[in-house]
Length: 262
Image 1: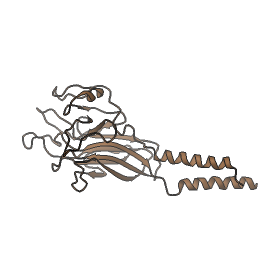
Image 2: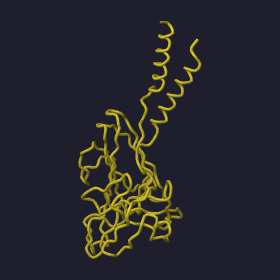
Image 3: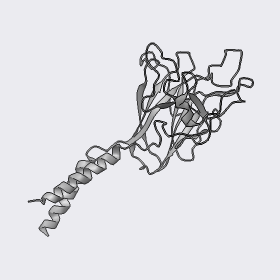
Image 4: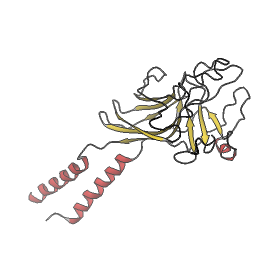
């Protein structure tokens, strides 16, 4: 008869392996950890705010553009920073509120610019995820919402690249946009993408892809209108191979049985 304590230990270890496989590998995926320093002012047109200031501001003002966030870095060649919204920043649309999916904050992937010298406002950010297994399958999950229904305004580029790769507007791996069928203007929608690690270190990135112009033909921004894709609750989880945990347990049992016979 197999030792009861041994069986319990096999179940416990298998359970811990399952929990580990389901833990998100993304840092600050819901953007609740604030940036150090203050927000960008764009030629003095916007107030200089700390991350904590956003919670106390009224609708339309509780946002700021930061040069980075814990876990997330900006992408060279994209806009000036990462725009963070505190819940309630935007007015409700169609009776549906604009709260965050998780926690109190989310980000908008089209930021801001100096009105006197408009420039690129689409934002780009990435995170380096380490400790991956080459050939392993992962699930990249995030919540998306279109800021409006304007054509060419809410595109979101998604990147999954080996460390050291270049991230720019032209080489996105996946693309998401406003969809009437998904109703992702009135609701946050959870999108999931299955990806495979080609390196032990991979870059997970997001970038605004809307090219609508701010003010139509009045002001040329060079890419972005200041309004675009909304993003929240990013996660990356390992997809367990079928039977992995069961095989682990069986291997342990087989080893124990061999020792008992010896």
